[in-house]
Every structure is written in C-alpha cells, then in structure tokens.
Image (cartoon, rainbow, N blue to C red; front, side, top):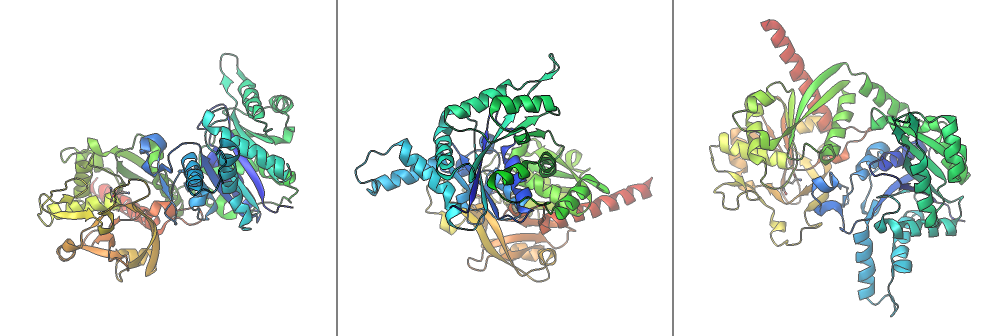
Length: 545
Ligand code: GLN
C-alpha cells in the first residue's frame, strides 16, 4: 500500500488561470494541517530548462539552492510554503527526452524500439514518483503546465492516467482548473467551455476528480450542480476560484470553498483547522498599512510584471513587515538619461536597479545610480544592478571615464566588472552560469552585518561577470567597500557606500529567498530605510511650507 498520495493539477479552457497559485494555496492549507508537502511543475516545452529563455517568453527564471534554473511558479511554491525546492521540482519535456536519449545511447533499452509510450511516459512517472520513494512527503502536488488538448501535453496526461490507474483513486487524484466566462450580453455565466475541457481530458482516459472554476462572478448553487452533473464530479468538488485582490488571499478562499477538505476526504486523511495565524497576520499587515512609500524599479523588462516576479513579491513581504504599502513604479532603463533622471526619480523614496543581461538600457541605469548616490536616496542594486553601481562609482568618483563591464565593452580600458575566471572556457549557454547557493562572509562593522545579524550567509546566484578585484583598493579608499566576500574564491558579493544612508549592491539574488514566513532581511531593511527617507522628506517639506 503506497504511503505518499499524489495530486495532479491540470488546466483547461485557457492559460494564465493561476494553476500555480491554486497548487501553492492547496499545499499551504495541507502544510498548515501538519502534512508534509512538496509541489512540482512539469513543463511541456523542449528547452531543457527556462534558463535560456528570454523573460518576454516566459517571465522570470527562478533559481533554487541547488542551482536549477526553473519556472517562476517554483517561486510561488517557496514563498507560500517556506520550504526550498530543487532541480527535481521542475521538469521539462526537453529534460525528459534528454535523459531517455542518454539511456538509449548507453544501450539501456537492450535493442528495443524507444517510444513515447512506454519510455517517455515511464521517465515522466519516475520523475513524479521520485518524491514518493524518498519517503519525505505525505502528499505530492504535481502541476502540469499548458492546457489539456495541447499536443505537447499528451504524454503527461497519459502518465497521469497510468498513475491513477495503478495507484487507485484513493491515492491519486486530478484537480482540473477551468474558466467559467461571464457573457455580459446574456447576463450569464457559461459552463460549456468547462464541460468541453473535462471531456477533452476524458478522451485521454482521465476523469477529473475536482474542478476549480476560475470566475469573475460568484457561482450559484444551480451553476455548481449543473457543472457537477455534466462533468461527473460531486457538487462539493466544484470549487469556485473567484478573482482575488492579492494572490495571498487564495489559500483562505480555497479554505472557505473546502478544497483541502475534499482532497483529504478522497485520500481518507483527516481534516483539521489549518494553522494560519502567521499567514493571516502577514495578510492583515499587507492590507492595513500605516504608511505608503514609492520605490522605483529600474529594468528593461518592466512592461512585463512577470519578469521581476520575485522582486515584486519581496517588496510585498518587506512592506507588510514594516506595515507599509510599497508602491512600485516601474521605470524602463532605456527611457532614462542624465537629462531626465531628476524629473523621473526625484519623487521616489528608494530605487532598485534590477538584474539583467546585455547592453540594452545600461547607460540609463548608470545615470539613475549617479542621481540616487548624489542625492542620498536609498539604493538597492541586484546582480547587474550591483555591477552598474560599481561602474558608476568608477566613472564618476574614481574618474575612470570609460570604465565598464567586459559584458558590455570587451575593450574597455577599465574593466571594473569582468568575466569570472571559471567562465572563460565556457561556450554552452544553458546551465553554465555561476548558479545556486554560495557562501558569503560578511565583514564586521558593515551595514549588511547589522542587517543579517550573521557572519556567514548563503545566497543564490545567476551570473557570469564579477567585481574585478584589481580595483578593490581604489574603490575602498574612495568609499565603496566590499562588505561580503565568498571565502573560497575571494569574489566580492556585496558592495556598499560608507557615506550614504543606504546604498547596497549585491552580486546575488536575495529576492529568491524572500517568503511570507521569512521576508528577506535586505528587503525589509531597504523598505525601512526608504520609509525613514520618506518621513524625513515630508518633515523637511512641511518645515519649508
Ligand atoms: N549580466 C550579468 C552577469 O552575467 C548580471 C546577471 C544578472 O543580473 N543576473 O554577470
């Protein structure tokens, strides 16, 4: 009798219905009842991982402790559950095929013809059930990316069918997320697309056990019973998922609808009141702020919110911690130049320069850093943002007018940011950056030392270029100090300015580690500094009037 139970989350009717948030919310409710949970995302595209994808294609690339470049949904899983994920939590079709083809080359199929069924489906099943064999989890939630009916989803749906058949419905169940559109002309919610989508799933031999129905209007009992009747599910298994003002409301909405109760009942597990005190305290603070501040987020993908997902969520966590609403103003770095920087930045209480790759928009970022440095506006630079701060300092304080990163100008006379030694022989683009969790020793008597209240920290990385140590002494003497160093390589991980109220650049990505239960200390402190700046500014303005 298998111990670990499996929940599959599939999507129908339309993409972008929020499968990841529903999966994370269910996981949160089960975790809050004491169950050990993990969530996995299976992505039906051919890339080995999203690391090589442009953010315009797929939003942010989330990085785990073990250095996997993954789908941004893993960020939601970690933020909701406060448990780290790993490479095993995100699998793509590319990776599945890669491992099957490698097995074939090693001769492991003993002369057999290698086929989608059973070889690809077996590899998919193995990657799902690996969590069960580890014995670490009571329930594994597996989200299948894409929409049922897509050609590329078929092997995944087939793997789900086989697991359900082999394990029985008391051990494996399917939640199908659908959409109930509202037709204004008819004044009605329409169930037909849901019926069709459930039918599409059935054509592959999979009966949905629970329907989560995304809707803009409440579902009446009549609609629920209609959906239940036409889709072969019990009425209690028709779950309304109404639009929420924040994704962090969704666990409570699912609780009110009884999603967790239906899942546990089907598995023969006991339901108890979930312990959500910490979660609800966060929600209260998030929704009832005492102050409001405005932060500028400077990047080159700002028109797409998903590109900076983890940064935006970290602001929400840090804002709640400070009982402060953080209004984020996204500023396109390509629109910034020295001339318009004052008019675009002067009203801000803090500025974050975002991570990124390539030359586009970097001069705008550098101009922004100069302005906030000179005007003592709190500044937070992440990865490329930190590198921009180093270049700005070199150009305008050390007077090295053509200082640059060799990523942008290979022939710069002053390569203050340069390619890491370990990267020089790298030619493949996928999975070859400095990735995952690395140790950092924080220097005593520095701002990060006070903020982390620790000497040794571990943070996640994703970059190829580094602070060039040859310029360290010059920088330090002029007031930009290295406050965090990797003990093995000597790489500079944190820089700060000594004569500025809050100016910190980090080579790593703190945003990947901020969760509801554990807001990241750097974000919390940055928001605190921005709030202080806002309040003192107001006082100054009041004194002037
Ligand atoms: N492009 C820079 C590098 O590779 C910064 C990367 C980033 O911001 N994640 O070093």
